[in-house]
Each structure stands twice: as C-alpha cells, then as structure tokens.
Image (cartoon, rainbow, N blue to C red):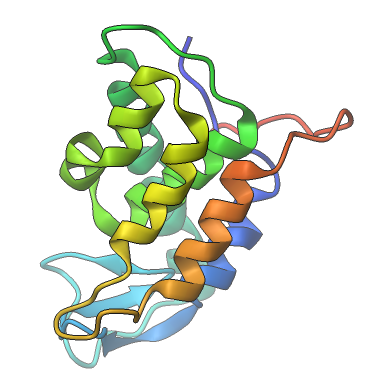
Length: 160
C-alpha cells in the first residue's frame, strides 16, 4: 500500500521551503517559484497566483511521495516506517531529489533496520555548493521529525 503525507506535512514543507509567488534564484542559482518548485518553465520574471502555487505544490508533493514509496518498495527487507518518518523522507526527497534518496545512507540504514543511524544520516546532506552547512537547520528539523513518535491522535494522511 502506498503511503501518503500527513495533514501536518504541507505546513512543515512551506516552513522549510518558504512560499514565493515571484520567481527567484535559489542558493544554487536555480530559478524557483512557489514552494520550492523548479523546472524549465520557471524563468526570471515569472509570477504565480496563490492557486497556481497550491496546484504545483500538490503535484510536487505527489512526485516526492511516489519517489519515497518506490524507494521503500525497493528495499530487500521490507521495513515499517512511522508517519513522521515518512514525512521526513518526503521533505528530504522534495529538496534533494529521488536519486539522492535512493543512493543515501538514510535508505541503506532503514533497509538494515538501523533507524537511529538513518536519522543521523540526514545530517550528511547539509551542503549546498561550497557552503558546507547551508541546510543544517532544515536537516536538523527533518531528523527531529524522523525521530518523533507519531502521536496517538495523528490526523489522517492526505492524498495528493
């Protein structure tokens, strides 16, 4: 069964990525708009409405969710992950990409059942270009989310 992000995920991701309706260049010089959306269509001067931003955010979350589900399905030994762990992996994938997730120590450790090591491995992904710690705070928040037990009254997951 494919997993979905929790109801808490969109505010978490918006906090991490920010929300900007005018295209800007990110730390790598990539044109970005909305909530961390990149692509060939994102060029200097592009402006979105809030509705366009929301639409693309749902598409981008769907892509990242699919990538995490695929990575989990590819593990030799199927593993359970909590909702918070799933959300942390989707946030990581949204930011770094599916290939980075698949090749990461995070997934290797999950596949081996070493969840504490998987949480610590988020911190291996702090670099942006020559800035070794640019993503430190984000990775610390993703690590904290990964380590946080799901509350018993967790709201239902949302389909995107």
